[in-house]
Image (cartoon, rainbow, N blue to C red; front, top):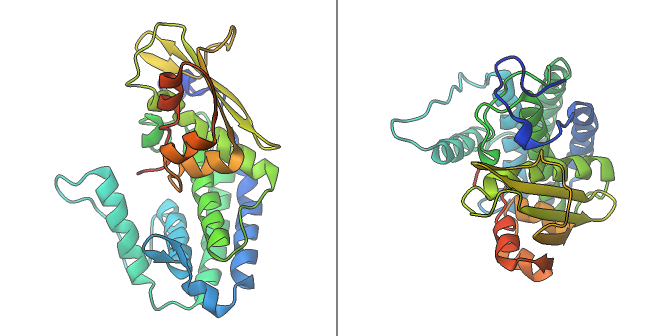
Amino acid sequence: MSPQTNGVSDASWLGTPIDARPLFGPELASLLDLLRALPATEWNELAVPGWSVHDLAAHILGDYRGRLGWSTNGFRPASAPGETLEAFIHRVNQDWIDLHTGHSPVELIDALELAGTQVNRQFEAAGLGTAGLAVSWAGADPAPTWLDIAREFTEYWTHRQQIRRATGRGTDPEPRALATVLDTFMRALPHTMRGTSAAVGTKVQMDISGPAGGTWTVTAMKGRWSLAAAPNGQPTASVTLDSETAWRLCTRSIEPSTALTRAHIRGDRQLAEAACQIVSIVY
């Protein structure tokens, strides 16, 4: 399978393709189990700034419905003239949540189960080497479908963690899902480093500790940074983060300044600090 086929230009700089498709079914099951276990009071807990658990559950439903082409009361979002991608996404997200304010938890859970199952089937049938939707935080437009699908998995996983944390449950430590999320998030490293000048061949290494962790090396090439170059030789800079700090940094649940206080840095600190600006969501 090549990320360069079927209308996708050379995307090798994004690194080895990820197949997140088998994880969507278990992720949906975990979400439904979580939501069904919540007492009524916990649906009102603040999950993210401005959104309750109820709001966030409605947002996840919107993520599903967006992949299926929408269908609630003729909801068909369109961007306004001059509207940025970020502004458009934030506005549509809020409009969808407002549309579901009066829906009961049972109604949301039933709708999530139906839509989530349909999305899972859609992804199961998708080819990974075709052109998918853009992944702006990775600088890929269009992105290969493998990255588009993996990005979507991180969205669902992250929102479930936000609900877990809001209701006192903490991050789900299941390593296979977390490893896929971290691997996907690290595909933002070349785009993160795009404004950082360095000699061709300069390597910056990101290490994430723990069972779900790994090592990602981004190399300065002529005109871009790349995850594809063989990580031979010593990196000019390396950063080690624990997995909790890493995923929360990439989703801006914590700021780079906080992550740096928890990081172990070796080598060029300026390059290490540049890598810690990584963000793997539309922000």
